Image (cartoon, rainbow, N blue to C red):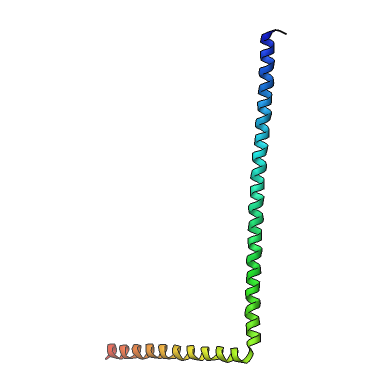
Length: 108
């Protein structure tokens, strides 16, 4: 083999090795991207699960409060509702009264 053939052979081997290294690099990049996506999906799933668990705990806490406070809580709640009804009555009665005066003034 002459020196020119040796150089060509060395060039082909180097080029083949570079092609192999580039293919390996692309495989590594693809694997890293898949891992990153899998981790993101796992984190999202875990976040969704924790959010659902938190909602369930909130519901259970509310029901526990409602059932354990019993009559005192019901009385307090009924008092709040009575107050709201009273002020709604005052507000709408006042609005109706004002509209009545306005209509009477306009119709003479």
